[in-house]
Image 1 (cartoon, rainbow, N blue to C red):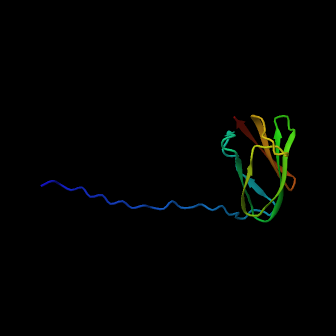
Image 2 (cartoon, helix red, strand yellow; image 1 turned 90 degrees about the vertical axis):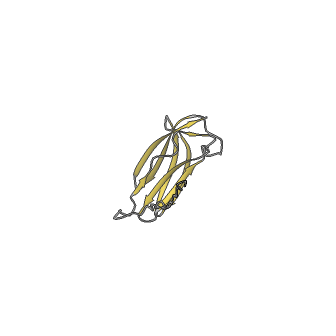
Length: 119
């Protein structure tokens, strides 16, 4: 008699994590590191996750290594929000490869994160 092997598996769902602002003062914003970083033209978009406890206006800017402004947008953040930059300047032209700074300013506080754009 040949032994029979029986295998039973159970699939356990992976829990979803939802960011919620707990005891965060109104006007305070947390900013994730840009991802992917480095980013390539084929990926087309670099993202940053933002989180606030209340509706907050912020300025999103992209500047060159010598802090020349190439892109600017005013955004409203209320809770979690993902902001993307399409690797273009304010006229819609694709930026050159190199190092850029993504800056988020709200209530007088600025967060500056570098991102590398590869071909």
